[in-house]
Image (cartoon, rainbow over the protein chains, first blue to last red):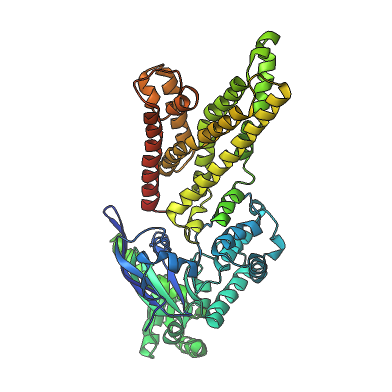
Length: 306
Length: 245
């Protein structure tokens, strides 16, 4: 199978410190692949390597089966990117900042610029100098800059930074549409886990430079059960009783976590009440990407602390 | 290429430093005329020849503007890409790293050439209006070539400045280094070695080429400037290609 982006043993070392350790991933056409990780996990370093801003110490990046190191000039025009805290020429207008790109890539600039500005929702600011834009508008302009040459591949580092909820929703819809309708391959890193969960097809979890897991978002929802959280007077006894009745549970601080679907909530209440436990609070919680992420990251962090 | 050069001009369109440099160069003939009128008595003023007047303008352009403002402008053009963090978007368009430097220096050199020519034309017009002694077509053409050559001689220094900008990632320290070198050369006095020292060699080439005895030839003065430019260019390209951005 021909992958759009592929990394082979991608490694980055700064002196004796290895910040990216043998990263291997493959991304297919039209796929949205998200990279999650704590601050300092190596997301931005990975993205910079994917864009040729820094060179890998070891390993290889391949775009459309071509070695990126030897084909940057042919690959990069097909890639649109948004980097964390994107920079602009503040003294120029929104339109002029985009013209700097269209002048180089040789596009029919006026039509394209208008179209992109309308799509991303900042057409009203076309002639405004960038220094007068707010953070959200600047982030949208960065996205315009990434989309201006109709790329086949989008590489986005924290593209939701500084956006308001309405804009996040618009950008998410736009990115999903680009991937599903136009077959644009998207590599995205973000801290907004709930957003990633809504748009990504697959998620790679990066911890201290190592890809510790790759999950399929649809499988994540199917495989993982929801939880019922209960606060009762005697946690140990309640846990024992529920386990005897076939529930899987654990004690988390001052509450009981039962791994069961939402529809079993009445059964749990009935069992507890019939066994004379005082139920103070009970509610269900679906299993989210955030839960999965923390479950994966926390043991790794604890291990490091020990 | 044309559009890329246009981009470089678009980026600095509103730069106050650019306008200041341009005004300094273009209006230097007027400023010097005013200075002559204020400082000199009538008899001395009458004795200023066309050649002397045009030479004063050129001295001003090369020493005050060429080696300071022109360098500062080049330093600023590169360092602001780091300051604004726009270098990343430029390199991912993609613009090759060597082109990134080359375009900037070409754009600013063409600008320098244009304003030097404007300054020259204004000088000639003033000389014509004032009916200065020695004004004739043959000398004017010769002077035009000297002006253009002087403008080109400034280019190697910008590569040196840009190399420092790439090392320090800012424009202030490189300018300090440049000013320090200039002051140091003045402090050195009249050692013959200064004839081939890159920062003082242009002065010899432009103004003292004839009638000055030296153990160094004019060609050696040229070589020193070209060598500075080539070495700086090589190191600047190597530095930007190795940079982690």
